[in-house]
Structure formats: structure tokens, C-alpha cells
Length: 218
Image (tube, rainbow, N blue to C red; front, side):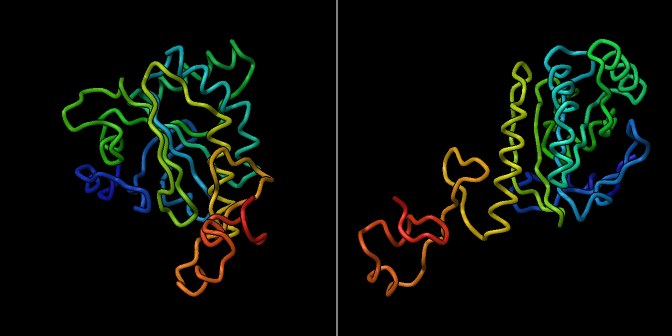
């Protein structure tokens, strides 16, 4: 059962920086409330349906990498229109076939209220077959990043981890993550907003393209 916050969000187009709509619903680990995850990172992701090929490969790999997300103080939460009992049957099949248990919660959303609140499902849609959306939610409950894949293409789990690492790193250093950034690589400084600093900088790029704490970016 969803909260009024989720219902109110159903007409909104969520953007980065917005507070994620709160909801409470049944899941494979019992009742969950989104705001109950405050204080840690949360990745909320939708999948089109249980017992589908691409979703199964995603959940197997996410279960295998669950410890990596946990090590980053990040929880996983999946969302689907399928019923709780369908989720149970699917997770048992995954355990029996792949010898791995999916222990992160899978939320049921048979009325599509949560999916619509997050913009995962268009108002006129009757199912979520075209949706594979991911929300990266920070400890304060703010949406920090979003991705959307077509139903016939699985997510990149390494990219999910890289994005989480980048978000945590730029928060810790008040810096910027350049293209293709990987953990351990240098970040970039925020460009100055002071004209005197611009004029004092070395070459034309030194004032806006610098490694964090290391001066000019080479």
C-alpha cells in the first residue's frame, strides 16, 4: 500500500535533486518504507516482469555483487508490477537454477502507483513492460542520478557501481568526476567564479580544468 506522497508524485516529472516520493509497500523481505532507508544510499530500480530473460540475468548479477553495494553503504531495492507471490516463485527459481539467493527487497506494485510516482510508467500505460529505470538516492533522500534502459537491454552492474563510487567521491571531495572516471583516479576542481583568479591563472584552461588539489590539469 503506497503513501499519499507517492500518489501526489504521480503527476510530477522527477529531476535530479528532487526528494524521492515516499511510499510503503509489501516486499520479499516484509513491509518496506522508502524513507526508512534514510541515512544510507539506496538504488531503486524497476524491472518489467518476473520470469523474463534479461531481468533474470540482472538479478543474478546484482545478487552476486550485493556485497559490493553493501560495502559502499548502499542498499538495493527492486520494483515490479508482479505480485509478491510471483516474486517469491521467481526468486526460488533463481536460487535453484543459479545457486544464489536474492536477499534485497523486491517491492510489488500491481496498481502502478509507485511506478507512476517515479515517472517509470506513463499515465496511460497499463503495464511496465517498456521500463527499466534506476534511481540513485542519497542518504538525505534526494535523487542524485537516474538511468533508463530499454526492456530488451540489461543494465551494466559495473556502471551502477562506478556511478555510485563517483557520486560518493564528489560529495566527499566537493569536486567533479571527469569522463570515464574510475575509483582512485583524480577528480577535478570546481572552476573559480572570481575574475581575478582567472586572470592570474597560467594558460587559458588553468582556471577551469584542474585536478582537485593538484593545480592545472595536464
